[in-house]
Structures are given as structure tokens and as C-alpha cells.
Length: 399
Image (cartoon, rainbow, N blue to C red; front, side, top):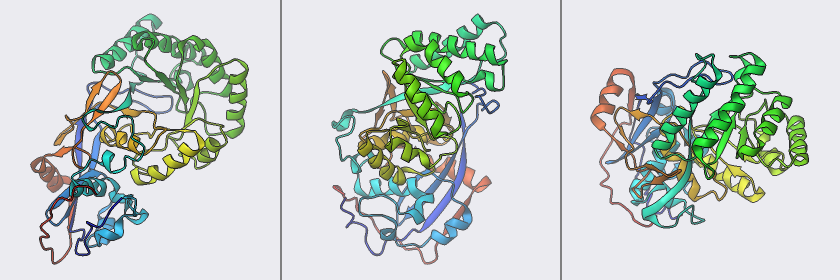
């Protein structure tokens, strides 16, 4: 990537930070471990200014970190390939958004080394799945009514354009009696397979709520449902995963094994290399977009899949798919549908199981500066460097 446009005079002039409130269409229930996730996620947003050009994105940066970073020469923040250096990754997404705006290119386009899912800019489409199917029916003791409840939720997702679904399982780990919870998991998987149709992919996520034997029972009982992956079946354990792999081979079960959301065990990369697991799911915020560029290239070399976790931060819906340009084995965008006060993501569309990514500078999102400024004044902060001067940017096409 040509970064000659990063002039010596460019400095990080200003960092603003605020939490924008969001709202899901419905309450998100429990998973195998945690109580209800609620209806009101928040988007932690940092907005940076370098001269008269801004960028923004997900960030958990502290005010103290910002005070140390402000004034840094921008050219010192990026590697030659465009990735953000480790010392500045608290601003990974705002910096990449800013760089895309400077270059007048989408982040997808800047990192599109392999042609991505689509090389036609006007129709960049990346597979996605509805990740909202939590334990929303626990108030129902009648199993038939519970299955119908979850089927309606899946149909809501299908009506929004989804064809692929991830289903939370593990009800018997905490919230239901073990056998009843396991049976409800199985019944709901079958019901959502009907909603998804034969072409849709369905995944299950136990959030470490299964034992090895429970995992095998569910996979055997749903063998005809063509599950695509099982995620976090139990806590990261190579011995148990190798045993599960051997058992699956014996019974000709081809479900992929995915892990990495929870404790983000670093050994998972080794296990992916050794074919113990199939897909790594470290979070999109931590380690972040720039680190995922490296992780994805390694997983590609090993023939493993990449599926960054992004539930609960809202903006992950939009930024995740840009990685597909650089990672051949990118699996899906995890889509946690929510609206955010002050954030316009309408240029992204869900269509027949894909998210259409806009060919717009940066991440293609629009921030309402008035709304952001008001929330920042009420509950956020701003850090500026001394002696700020306007730089008069000219967009540089072809970065």
C-alpha cells in the first residue's frame, strides 16, 4: 500500500470519545452462562481529527491514553501495508476510517488483495448471519410454545433479509433441568432449520455450556440438520476437541468446530494450524482489525476459517465485513441488529444472507456530529494538542 500521502506535518490533533446509546428490536435473552443481554447496547466511539479531516470508530481508549497519543505524527502510526501499529490500536478503527477518507477509498478496497467475495465495487457482498437467537423463551414451560416462539424470532430475521442463523444452545447448563434443556436445544435447532430452508446455514453456540458427551448427543440428534459449525461447545481443551474430532469422523459428521470468542485462548491458533479446530473467532475489537489482518493471513495459510466475534458493540456489524477483502477464509459477518442514536449505517443492506458493503470512503458510516457532540459533552471527553493548525487536506485517490 502506498502511504506517501502521509506527510511529515500530519499530527493527531484531537480525540473525542463518547458512548452512543443503541436499541435492539427486541430484548436479547440469556445464553448458557449469562443472564439477559437486554435491549440497549452501547457503541463506544472515538472521533479523531487530523487537520480538517476526521475519522471515527469503535474504541475503548481511555482519556489518559488519548493524552499520551495526541500530537503523534500520523506517519508513525501505520505499517507499510496500512495496518495500524500496536502502540496505536486503541484508535485502530478511527485511524483506518480516516486513512480511507484521505485516500477516498473504502477500507475494503484498501485491503482488497484477493478480490474478496466480489471484485465489483458496486456489489460488494459478504456472507452474514443473524446472531440474535438467544434464550428468549425460558418463560414458557410448554415445549411446543417455546419452539414456536423461537421460530417466530428466526422468521423476523428472515424477513430482514437473513438466511443464515446462529442459535444459542446450552439451556441445561444453568437455566433448565439438564435433560429438558438439552431436548429443547435440539427441538429449536430443528425448527430453525425449517425457517432457514435448505440453503441457509445454521450454527450453534453453547457458550461453554456443554460437556463433551452433551456435544456429541446434540450433534448426533441433529445430524440431518446440516449444522455448519458448533461454537464454544466447552471450555478450550485440546484433548476434548481431538476426541470430538475423532468421534465426528467415525460417525461422518462434518460440522465445523469454532472457538475463540470467550477467553480468546492464544492456543487456538496452534490448534487451527494442527486441524484440531476449523474456525477462529477472536473479537473484532480486541485484538482489532489490524491484528486480524495478520491472524487471517496465517489462518488462510493453514486452510482454517476466520469469523471475528462482534456481538454487542453494534459497529462491528459494519466494520467486520471489510476484513473479507484481505482474508480468503473469512466466513461470516456476525450481525446483531440495533439502531444507534447519531449513527447512520443505512448504506449497509442485508440481502438474501449477505451484507452489501458500500463503496464509500473509510468504513462508509455517517456520524451526526451534533448528536455525538452533545453526548460527548454530557458524558464523554475531548483531548486536543497544543498549537493546532489547519493542514488543508486534499483527498489522495489511489492510496
